[in-house]
Each structure stands twice: as C-alpha cells, then as structure tokens.
Length: 482
Image 1: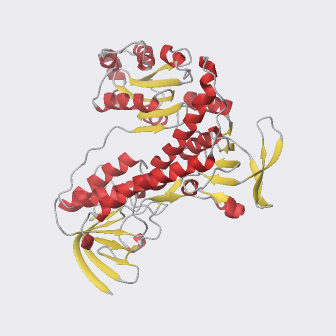
Image 2: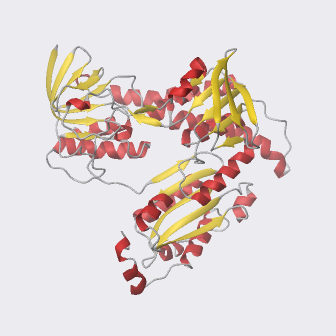
C-alpha cells in the first residue's frame, strides 16, 4: 500500500472541489485532489447546461407554434428527435471538455483517481492502493439522484435526468415524477418537443416555491399547457410488454391506467457522503450522515475537516458550490486561522416557461422568523395585463415581494413570470446592498419593460409599510433590518 503525506486533501473534482483545490493552493503547495469518477461537473455533464440545451430546442418549437397569434403564419414545426439530441450531446460534450481540460492542466502529481474512505480523522484510503495522511480535508463529493424504492418496479424503463442527455432520439412518452426544478424543466421541454408527458408530484409543491399564492398560480399555469398533477395518487407500478405501466387518479377523480416508454424519477438528490467512512471520524453527523457544518466557514464542527457543494446538503446550486468551495479551500489552506467567507444573497431560477424566480428570504422563512407579529408586508403584481408582457404574449405571471415594517428593508420575493432569471438578479443585488423599498423605487425604470411590473409590486408593498420609532419598537423582537 502506497503511503503519502500532505497538507490538504480535497475529495471530489467537481465545481466545489476545483474551487477548494485552487484556493487551498494559495496557502500551501501541498494539496491533493481525489476523484472517483469521470472529470466534469454535475452542471456540465447532467445538470444545468444539457438541460438548457433541451429547453432551447423546446422554445424554438414553441415559438413556431405561437407565431400565428402574432399574425405570422408558418407550417407546423416538425421535430427531428435525433437532431435535437445530437445537438444536446455535442454541446454538452463541449462544455464537459472545458472542465476536463481545466482539470488536466493541474499538476499530475496532485491528482489521484479512486474512491476515498476515511480511516480516521487524519487518514483516507484510496481504493486498495494508497493511504494519505493529511492535516486538513475538504469533502466535495457532490450528490446523486434519489430514487424511491417503489420506482424500482419499472426496471430498465426507469431513468434519471443523467440518462436523458445520452438519448439518441426522443421517445414517444414519458411519465415524470417530481415537479421540482429538474422535473418541471425537463417535463415541459419534452412536452414541447412532441413527447407525451404526464408530470406527477405529491403535496401540491411545484418548483422551489413556498409562497402559497405563487405556488397555486404556478400549478394552474403549467397544468393549462400539459398534464401536471402535483398532488397525484399513483399505484400499480410495473412493466408490461416492455412499457412502464401505472394507474393514477386523474384530475376528474377517475382511475386511469396508462403505459409510457420511460418513467423519469426527478425525485430529489442525496449527498454522496454515505460511502466516505465518515463514521470513522469524530465528526458530528446529521440523520442522513451529512457532517454538521458552519455555512459561513464550511468547517465541520471545530475540526480540520471542511465540506462544500452538494455534499453539504445546504443549497445545491452551482454558484453556491463555487462559493462554498472557495470558503472551504481558503479555510483549509490557512487552518487554524478560520474566517467567515462571502455568502451572497440566495437566488434561484427555474428555466420553465413562464420562469420561476426566488430571491432573499422566501415566504416559508419569513413566516417562521416573523410569525404572526405583522412585522413584514407583502406586495404583489400580476403580469397578465402588464404592458410589455402582453406585447410579447408572455403575459403569464404573478409576483409577491416582501419588505420589513419600520425599516422598509426589502427582504425577498417569489414569482412566476417572464424574464424571471433577469429580474431575480436585480432583486438579489438590491437585497445584498441592503436597499429599502423607497430606495428601489428611486431607481430608473424604462418604458415599456417587464421591470415596470416589479415597480408596481414595490409600490404596492410601499403603500402598506409604516415607518418610524413606534413600529420599530413593536418589531424589536423580530430584529428590524436583520
């Protein structure tokens, strides 16, 4: 067994791991990076980039279908599934290639291939060939799709999002389970590309939304385009004649039995920590085996072990993984000099149509933090009659914005509507700069633009806000401006 010693070991070469490696290198040249699979981030291989390629094709087809509403006549779109998937795979491989090239530019002596398992707080074993003793570690092992056991009844008809991007052609039908970000994006895209899609969920949730008004609106809007039941009752799941067959209660309360080419399980992801041997360390673990970590330092307890990215089970987004990797790498590099890193305003976008955006504190967080004290207000706007949205025939949407009583501080927003990916950035910047609603209303708004709808929502909440010492005194327990 080969024996190595180093200052820092980074386990995982994805977005968080690469960021951790580069930042740890600022403080010590002795950093090793371990990867058990193929190089290439989740985002590039099976996540944000290939999904957007499929969505782009779907949008092109949908635009042709919508053209007659503008008085522009055209032939119905003809979907060449093989050509669609060829472009998805080709561009996906291009994005992955950039990541692989970046990894392979790193010193060969710093890269080790194999599965790492902790032997104790100071040592990891790589497969059956190497034991590394290190002073600090960064766990950046990512996540994998979660597949509920009942779905295994579908056998080889069961797929995950990773499988979609290796298709040679589009299937005729897919049942999608899980109306979260992945399920909603892929389900709608496949529908627009001519695939028969039914999207099933439980509990009424859709996307990452927590605001009941926005969630109900989203459920209505998406169900108008294709079959979406976010509180479905599904049973009798099995394979019949090489097809996935299931029985469900439709929206009219009738039992339906239907067959599909595939069942796509978009039922969440789980951190890849269960095979790391963390039980051999002194770390305090959550119920699912994830180490407890400070989100500002990414330090696990008071130990010399740090965690970053999807493995941390905090916010599974690429930009968050990069930030966490930076924080973990810097702190692992200069340990024991631990410092808080930059944590940005939370921002999320779903690339459906209409899009979904969330920034800052969401509705669930606000109701938990503020309770029934009335120390925050909600403003809202519909995009159905908003000028620019109607011009573009993109007038489906609803926004709710949240602001603090007494201070007028803008706290967050949840919304469905056009250009949500761009509006979310503007609102996130306002939150990070601790802007008040009056300050945001002082900003310029061109005409006609979709952002005028944001101004309407801000005006709505501003009219409800009360300023001054009395309301601040009432809200002291909530922490005005916190």
